[in-house]
Image (cartoon, rainbow, N blue to C red; front, side):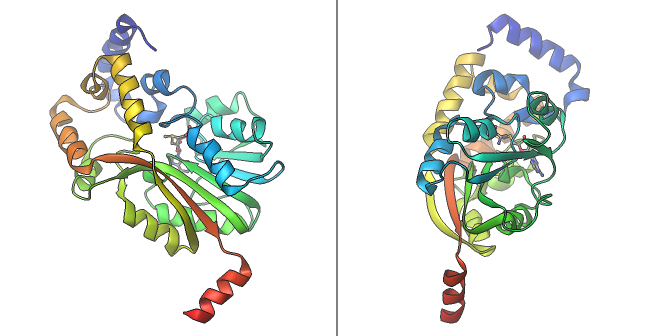
Length: 270
Ligand SMILES: C[S@@+](CC[C@H](N)C(=O)[O-])C[C@H]1O[C@@H](n2cnc3c(N)ncnc32)[C@H](O)[C@@H]1O
């Protein structure tokens, strides 16, 4: 946690250089990482470990960590669960930082909606707090489906909008964060099922988002002080309105790529 004086110094220099860093995504800022550590999302490994157990992933299974950030989940899947994992992320400074402690075979540069892998390679795809950042999440989901083996698992954790209304307000904000792309639950479920996954589980874990918010308040004094680092002063009330109306939540979704027999049975029935 940052001491107050250090935060103020960082805030002052950030404001001075505001023009240069205006487009800094929330997840790339040191301010967020001070609170979350290397897992750049609510809840740390809580849902990662839960998903491994739910999907029954066993050592030597092959996984893709799509949008791996610093590679924290990639490491966790390998070290705690013995799962052979490749992390993929866009080649930004965050990714470069991750790469400095990983081999080029473990963390690869690329885009979730254009995966540099052949068909049916992975037993699981993890996509933690990434889907809401993508301009075309449907295309990324299609890619996840393509690279998964039949019977493989898709694990998504993300921020979602618990109420329809505010999602469009959040979308207008000059902020690069999962909050901005938070979609209503049913829209996401339809997208995942639309590319051919069978939805196995859809659980609410908003308490993890609340816990992160509490940790931010402890570190920075208030949520407003934290948000002033990322949102221009004149638009803070818009952010407050969007948050109030969208009521952001956090969830875990698990999808299953159907086995051949299941697919043809469903086709025959339809
Ligand atoms: C909130 S961070 C989460 C990182 C990591 N999954 C974690 O939970 O620690 C979002 C990540 O998505 C990545 N990302 C954004 N757009 C992407 C894209 N088109 N393809 C792959 N990764 C992307 C960002 O670079 C960033 O590392």
